[in-house]
Image (cartoon, rainbow, N blue to C red; front, side, top):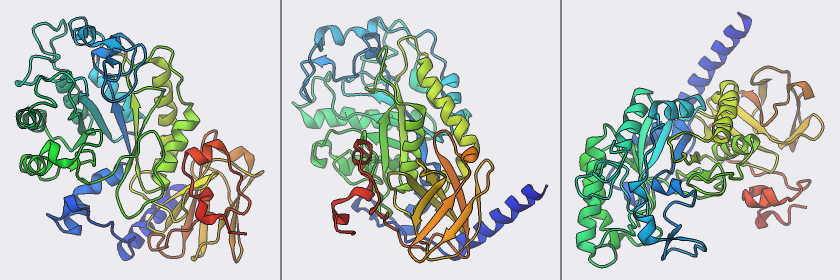
Length: 459
């Protein structure tokens, strides 16, 4: 009961503090000039609070276990040794019959893992529509498809039923459509028409994830498309891959650097490729959980991708990773949902998130039982480990040392909560102290600011 009373007090204090002091609002992008900052923030609020989503890449290419679209040969977007001839690839849908697909089971895995939204590849670069489009016969509901059921419909309904946010991925490049690259006006009519179908036939579509492969806005007639999309749904959130800045940018296969001025989302595979690959080399549970912490700590979202098997089921190893995330989130979700990154910028051994008067330090590696942080400009009045455990806090002029007994260290990421005397939201971002940091391949790959060239003269 004492613990419950304490948590109630902390929640009340946190809420009051959040109301009195706020972090600097993010800048409007050119794609958001039709609205005020307050309107944009209200529209983006669910997405920012969610922090964590599931990406699903899946279509008939899973029959081959090769990369979606890229394995179709010839491919104008890059080398694909051992690619599948287009004549064969384009006929795979006639054998694609995922009879074990259970949309509710897939969405339940995502929800249990703590994911708040689902993004599904309704059409990838190969041009195959995984929905019942009236504008093409190259689709999952084609008379020549043995499956014939609308997979997008099943996932949309399951996602809405589970209380998650439904989002769609749509590739503008289309290797199958006869007008693509030849008659842009005709192709864009088709492309815009399919986006309209997706926005109007599948219940609320909260976000559209484009993948234009760097083509300019004029190629897609993007201004006209955005106007159409906002007419269909004024609250829709759109990414940056349509030649326009959109609402957020999308680092791919890397953790984005700390950025509290623009919204961003890292998309990353759970294995080596986006689509299902037999015997794939999967990331460990620790890597997945630390990626979520690093993204949240950088003030961004994390979109973790899985690829379903040809029969529609989730690979057991992928399911195991989602279960590990579920276990960790049951204890630590308050350090993810509804937070902003900082005040500490991510370092090689920690990241941090904040809300109200609380700072959550996500510790990846300990030096003994300690982690040494730069000093905070506000006093720490309480501290604890999420899930249980004591914390000793030692404040110095230039450092803040947290000591946690080894028994309270988490297997993947330990989260230490610090309650401050005053709001945590108005503290300017604090760069890591790099004097004693050790550079490793993983820290460079993760673009940790602890190793930025600008800090080369810290000593």
